[in-house]
Image (cartoon, rainbow, N blue to C red; front, side, top):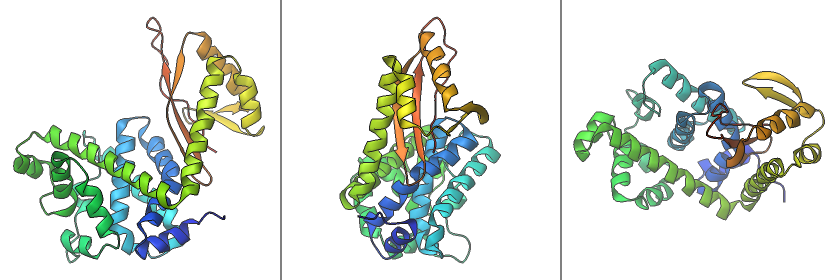
Length: 287
């Protein structure tokens, strides 16, 4: 079966197919994360801005005029979130409140929610959250009382607790998206499983001394390697680099692997020996 392209998924999502929206996000999630990591580095904020972008995309889906530009639109939301975070230079790991509130003359959040084609699914997803998390999610995204200070006052908790609960809520919402995508678009779920298995195979090969063979079998011979954003040679240079790291006593652990139609992102943690804590997370692969 031919996999739906972004335009088909976006059009279906605008027509009320929540599974299509979930599949659209899963198809583009790796590219969205790549944008966040490129702008912010491997930090928690990178994941936060991506998850926040998913909620913004869900809210603004009716405004997407060109379904064929859905992928670029999603990446632009992530890019804007990152710019806001960098410009603010403060420890707020999500987009500015103004992004989540209507501009003057626009519909209020309650009306936007009522008109959203996925409103029933959104309500079900939010209703499934634990009460403390559900409370801050509803206040943040669906009411006029959306600032951290206002939510903290209403819930009688510190602002850092509000941020923590919102982070948990966004991650739970992301898991719900993945579950919906798995139920309605099995091909996307199969791709996600395949890339995780592939990443795990590389980790195991590195730990058991067969790294060169795995790289030869699984990577295109013309693949290019970058390190800290700079060219580091071809795929033949990767094995010696990884081998040197492993010989220094560093171990590997797979944290995450995401795939879309034309990009794969692996997040692998380097577990340093106690006497040599110089390595940093994480080796990445994109194609």
